[in-house]
Image (cartoon, rainbow over all chains, first blue to last red):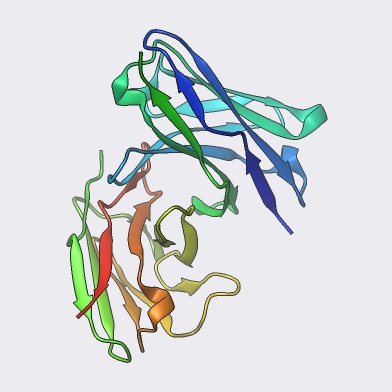
Amino acid sequence: QVQLQQSGAELVKPGSSVKISCKASGYTFTSYDMHWIKQQPGNGLEWIGWIYPGNGNTKYNQKFNGKATLTADKSSSTAYMQLSSLTSEDSAVYFCARLGGSSGVMDAWGQGASVTVSS
Amino acid sequence: DIVLTQSPVLAVSLGQRATISCRASQSVSISSINLMHWYQQKPGQQPKLLIYRASNLASGIPARFSGSGSGTDFTLTIDPVQADDIAAYYCQQSRESPWTFGGGTKLELK
């Protein structure tokens, strides 16, 4: 079955960067877009962007331009999101999610990776 | 950006019907395709797909969940509500980038 396994919780300092991973299994990694979503404590969901691992194409929510960088490693079926110049506003849980089909629906989600920005 | 508006909380009794609404700031439909989807999220868990394209039940989701709507107004119905359904529910549109989510409706027991 489709599984997305994300890396663990991170405690990072303001101004630094962090890289979160999302390892895919149970399907052909290079054939499906991978999306990333942010959820701040007690808040709703915010779409960050997507990457197509087949060719590395990306699209970002303009709000996250310069903040998030999406990459993918085909050899290990792993997608990555790097967040830079971290502030307290970046403290959140970050999910990866597979795009299922062409309608823009996310049919499988990782368990989430918590990022806490604190000095 | 397309703004999706949901009521924050809905209180319901077990065995009753729950109707959760989502209103979009502009149409999320293209021809007859409604690009609105619904997710359930329990505390400490990732969201789970319930309904795609407004009215299609995702794989493995019980038939007590259903969705309807078009254009700017959409509804998720749970009938009858069971204890396991107590969670937050989010609508999401894929009509236009950036994709956006509603603020979520927390389903609570009366």
